[in-house]
Length: 449
Image 1 (cartoon, rainbow, N blue to C red):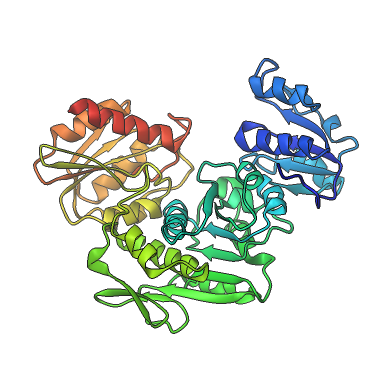
Image 2 (cartoon, rainbow, N blue to C red):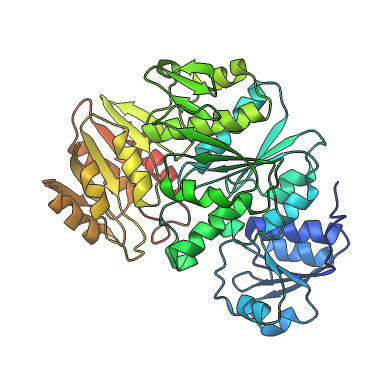
């Protein structure tokens, strides 16, 4: 097993357990570091707490006493913990560095890291890139925000294996020296402002994906996104743009019939099974990352003619009596739902709602032209009811849970309709994760059968 040979800190506080915190604490202990763990929500009887104590960690649960910072040289924080946490505020006052677990993972990896971020499309692009490399007979492992803890993957990574990392703004905000060989910046728009407070803070976190790159690294970016195009001007790395709108001599692009990387035609668009213009952007980014990593055109094509979706990302679930059910539970913001709605020309019944972050939903209205009915749930249902009314949608129903929502959607649907779960909101008012919400949708659809 690999150890943290170049990690220059001996006294470490791991703030927050969950999967990434537990994995980081174990790795630090196995590398001979002195580790203190603090988790307010954890219980003394939790298995992870027992295991870490048995390995030599000091574990403090139930509160956040400031004394946990005494003698500490660095804090490794769970990405979801806000920087207003009193421990982190005090750490800043004491000039104690604060990092996230990906910083540690980067220390372990001997070969190339492909780091992928953006407000939308990260999971699809990360999955596509990894599969393109594997189908090209290259060894690559997927990790990060996609559900596989980066340190766990990095520990078992072979010397020549690549790691393809999905990176959230929460993870990237804790970057100090982390540097992928290939960085991918898909798009940037206002999201997670309850965490980052300002758009500039959010943008800065996203741009950390390339902040430490040098002149022999690569930055793949969306040339159609003005915020991204301006942000990458400061990058030191080799810039590889992608675009749906223009031909690019040094990047990935499309015309009416085909997809190209530089001057090389890769695949006919008609051969691709993944739906939606937004997914074309993800495909261009993935092709760029795969080609720069040595993937073959044959491997890339094999993936694209078979890859239909990632679970919870515009995932086709079932055809029931001619109704097509799609699970887009990962659409936790308005832009994601806009892109999902744009993917269909058929009459659509939209299931939406969730955590109220204070925003309105007027930006959805231009994308509701094909929507014949909506089923609303969660904290935002009344806001979305107003939006649906302003859009002229006559059939507006509310549901208490996903089972009721799916039944109502089916009851107002007709053959050839699309029934689309694309909430435009986070899930945390009713569900622990967007995955749980999506799984409940899939279960409800299968119950109809």
